[in-house]
Length: 339
Image: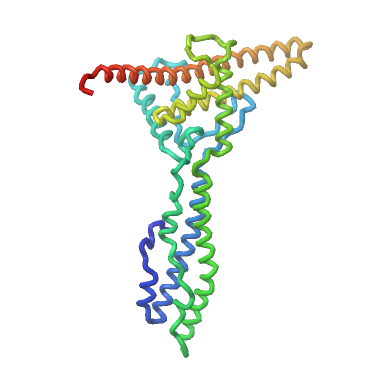
């Protein structure tokens, strides 16, 4: 169905000028088609609204579970290799590939409501009302009643009587279509209102998972890289809010989400290994193999923790710099004798 079809159609005027049975029948057929189109478009619109919400993956059971793919986010560019299979140093030719991968991801992740963005950037506030329902309302015809279509014809015979019967059949079938079309447009508007101004529960739960992982990554047991962050929940919540609100940091937010899901997988897998170790403590070979796997996983966890801390510190440094510039600007403005 064409979303732009029939904008501004004046069915009442068309009916007023339709004096013949053939003209009325043509209008009735057009109305029937239009109502079916509105119903089909309303179904598609509801699907699009629901698909625009992010799908939040559950915590991974293992560190190696691939993240749920999100269309539009960039794939990591792998370094080119020599003929013997060993990785080679990046050349100038590689720079275009590396930079284009980043810029595409930044552009797509910043595209707004839809599937091509980080989970926590989902913000429907004031952006969905009328997104689809307004154009559906524009192409939904004003109610036309049976008498307007069939009235004025009497004592018809032959072909004209058959045309009138056909017209009456269309009008009879159209009555439930009116109700369905009007209800469909109202349902789309109701969905827009339901999704506007609220953060989906799944997204709110994922935000809490993010915060818990960020707090874990700043525990004292991990190596200190000189960050000034205290690791308090309040401070890290401010960092996360900055990542969510600043559109220029969408790519960093997407990266942090990936690191958090990977960290969840590491922690869950380590917890499973700890239970297995209890059962293998008396079996030297099996315990040694499990211990080796755990050590490898702990090293991986340390790397992820470092990545999470680096992103958090970068965001905090940027906020501190902006605050410093503002302070200097305010001080210079206070010295201006012409103010």
